Length: 316
Image 1 (cartoon, helix red, strand yellow):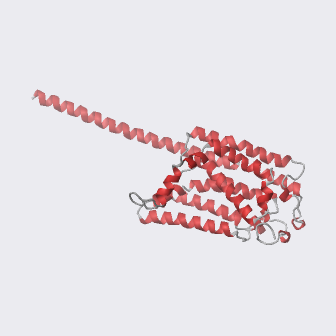
Image 2 (spheres, rainbow, N blue to C red; image 1 turned 120 degrees about the vertical axis):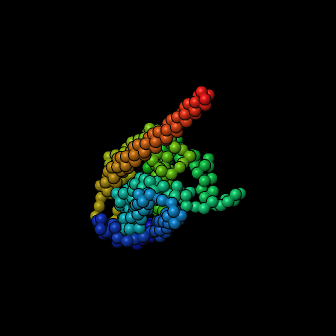
């Protein structure tokens, strides 16, 4: 039986996209995706019933992020990912770099804070606990670039180039834990950079761009290292099943190319999102300044009119 518990890896025929997209659900991720969609949907419905609005594009972003995770973990891509390094790398890159970006653009924390009821004075409900977590020292630490950037890099080099990866691949719980880790690392890395939700660490837009580009070169170097290797570097993929008809080194080179390419695509997406957010922030700031200037102008006009009125009264 293969490590994911979905059948024997020896039975897998050569990989094609059609075979990869066949149904083969991992129960943990199937339940997780359904729960995430249900909770988000509950929040949106609650706001709408209350007469509040929630942007449709945020809902679409979030649903897209969940569907990407579903696609990676609840189809035969997950089965092939256990025996093909290239397919596993697609899973890793999508779950750690594409899905987190879409989930964060969906602003789930903002939705929760708006949808959850307040517990009342002196009491603590889910909303209050969420606020406590957002303002906690723990959250300030794990969203700080001193933590997020090294963790982002270590998730590549410290995992694939050590025995830890092979250890995790030996069991279904280990494989699930690894994928959850990829998702968590992606979320805490991208949240301070381009997340819509409030957070304890939210630097200026220029600093966010620097944080983004600080980690990406290491990602590209990791892909190049796999592409340039003259021998298989990960034990779990040294001997692929003969039924797949693939060469381990060629498959590893393909995995490296996928890792290298994914260092570019999400960077561009995040950069576009950042520039858009920066533009909207500047627009809001300009409007606030205009309103403040209008108020000041009105006050000056009122004072001038009062002064004229006082002069008129004195002349009488």
